[in-house]
Amino acid sequence: MRHAKKGRKLGSDASHRKAMLRSLAMAVLENERIKTTEARAKEVSPLVERIITWGKDGDVHARRLALAELGDRDLTHKVFEDIAERYEDRQGGYTRILKLGPRKGDAAPMVILELVD
Image (cartoon, rainbow, N blue to C red):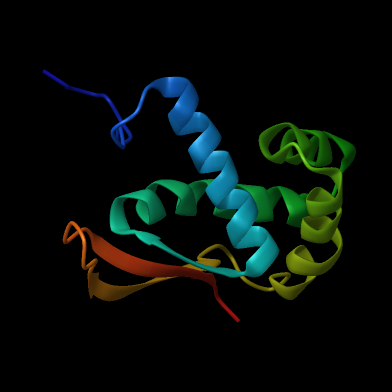
């Protein structure tokens, strides 16, 4: 039984899941909009929101946490300088999930995950 186990397995082992979520988070922060499955979007959305909140904090510790999570200096700089400034007055809820419908090949529910304006 999976009592008190949070998060989805997403059909992969822990290391692959961690790498996939990191890649999705980087794509969302870099492009500000991605098309993915609903389960993946629901898993990566809290991660993206946490990174943007660190960007709003702006201190050295938050910058190091974001860099450890993303692994990309340029993207971390973009989050802290550009993206965090846009959400200065917003208390969370930086992402939006728009449902598109099923994917043609396997009928997986597809969504667009984007940053709110």
